[in-house]
Amino acid sequence: MIVSIFNDVIGPVMRGPSSSHCAAALRIGRLARDLMDADFKEVLVEFDRQGSLPTTHDSQGSDMGLFGGLLGWDAADERLPGSPQALRDMGVNLRIETVDAGDEHPNTYRLTLGSARGKTHSLIAISTGGGIIEVINIDGFAVSVFGDYHETLLSVIGNGQALVQRLPELVQVDAILLHEHCGKQLVEVKAAHFLSDETIAELRRVCPVLQVRRLAPVLPIGSRKDTQVPFTTCEEMLLHDAGRHSPLWQLAMEYEQARGNLTEAEVIGKMVEIVRVLRRSIQQGIAGTEYADRVLGHQSGKFNELMQAGRLLNGGALNRIVLYVSALMEVKSSMGVIVAAPTAGACAALPGAVIAMAEEMKLSEEVMAKALLASGLIGAFIATRWTFAAEVGGCQAEGGSAAAMAAAALVTLANGTLPQAVAAASMAFQSMLGLICDPVANRVEVPCLGKNVLAASNALSCANMALADYDPVIPFDEVIETAQRVAGQMPRELRCTALGGLSITKTSLAIEARLATKKAAACGAPNCGCAR
Image 1 (cartoon, one colour):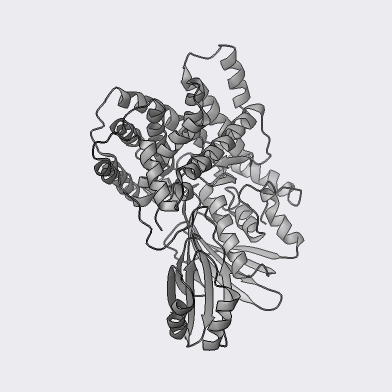
Image 2 (image 1 turned 60 degrees about the horizontal axis):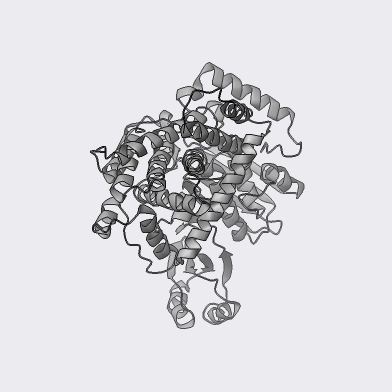
């Protein structure tokens, strides 16, 4: 799947502490719901003992996301924290077990679902960062489903090849794949629409015994056959520009128009809507948020009071940036609506920096949207070659990416040149290499707040350095390669949440125990979200 700025980088609009846990799990749940045609009474979820999920699935939102998806809810639905209880109230038996599966990816979900009529289906999926997923197995068949197509699945015994040959005569689709497992066959059809009932009826002339399942897309930007984008690396982008001095946001526009088959007005419109979501969330955070299952309380309000009274050290626009970053992190931790940009754990650095600086400069929401577009292209280069998942790359994959993206966006606000925007991104990412992932008490709050502030502060510094034509020395593409290599050299305990660093300090473990006791006492209460 070719990276899309709106699929992979700026988005989804969501609730929950972690996009790779909550938003991704919700998308997996939506696909599992479709697999069962919304008819299920038993749900078994299995997590590999060596992965990241056994210790974090409850506290970082996998449970509420997965079960919300099974209910058919949206990632921004205010009911999400109560989704486990909502399923139980419907008579669904939920079980979560830790197993020795030997899964290669740390964020692997194994689901087995059963209906009251004895129908059973299984699904294995991975969360690859920023809310992006890949279903890698359905009922034992090895597949690759990203949720970017309308998927029609045709289960047959023996006649699969005949269906593959007949389908192109009946309808135009993007891909027809034949999978085999234990004497059975699965024909997977990827298209912009599901196969019609009329087409299915024609196929039943070839294969009378034909089971049909339809999986709806879960990503905002669909894919299509033979999609091409003008560039996939920073070097290719600079060659494509060929000295025309195009602003980075304009090249991002060109990229996303090609990727999503969108008009310029549609691209700008989508990003302006995201800007408005973010601005509302910032104001909500400053006004004050509450949530029982969190480490930090409302802090941004006092920061704002002191800033308005002139009682903070003079940080100029940086103080407003810190305020906005803090507010967004507090909204995230209270299960409010945020935008994964590029992830929920790093949701505040980029928008906090861009919106605060744009407001200081009295710029419009459209200008903010263009800056976010510019940042999205930098993120697309990272996502194409690497990952945003801290479980794979450490927090350098989240905070480092956010810093690079924010630096380029800030240069864009200042009408800097294309080379300056790229230089800012490179310098900012270089400064974040090796950053570990170690959330206290399994909650994405501490030291995540500080790391978001660090990323935004770093971005501002590097943007100004780039505007003054400081030399980044190392090209941006090489910095991405280096981050990937550094991740491979990191111990698993430092790039897999809740296994090292601050997460295993005496204080962190005590906070975790206190919150677990508090949550157990409230189990069954409205919005508890407890999966046990």
